[in-house]
Image 1: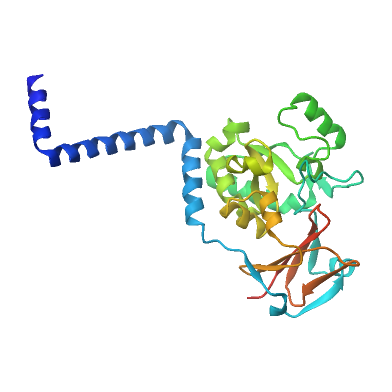
Image 2: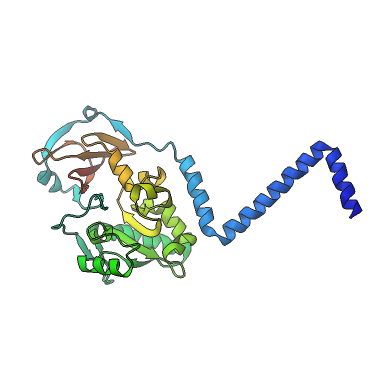
Length: 305
């Protein structure tokens, strides 16, 4: 005991040694605490990675451009949709309490690979790609707990879990655009505690998916954090939303109606169809057009760069 007292007395006399020792002790405790926290609370590491990712991706930009930078023409919406290079889908529909689905809305759904699971047809290839990616990386299978829901099924969901289910017409499941997913032993909130769940959250954009209700966007979405609820928005929207840590509400609101934006080899424009027409660039190698459920269309054009 006296030896320890003598050591502390010497350390106090030598201020530099004392300060360095104190810093070393704090760092050691910090490292040990971080190791324990990340090992036993996997979601903590995910949140730290998300924070760091937000800093690293702060330079990701969606550049607004002048329409006269490209040769454009006015085209009738139906004529554009019928172009073989164009895909019409419902991928960019904003669905929430403020923008509910119309009473006569019909989701473009189908059965996914004879599985008995129905989802919006625009998800077929994307989910197959994500599922294969998860399987190859983590040697586990990605399962779907809930996909497309009819009016009646959504009503049942509300009655059984009113604290989580969105009101009738306000659920993305009624459009078949959302999937509630899980892996063995990790469902619900535990999904993000798995490596597959964390990968889905951070890299799901590579397959066109976002975590629709993130913990850092609750104020904008008005929906509690749901790490299991993935939503298809396609390319390059999923990458922009994920890397810039935006909500779908914030992202769509950032697209000024009538303006043009570039991101990589894509041109994005949100337009109100004046007299059933759109003003669009002439040259493109492929395009996707989707209603935004706010009275406009979001057109995403792939260009040759």
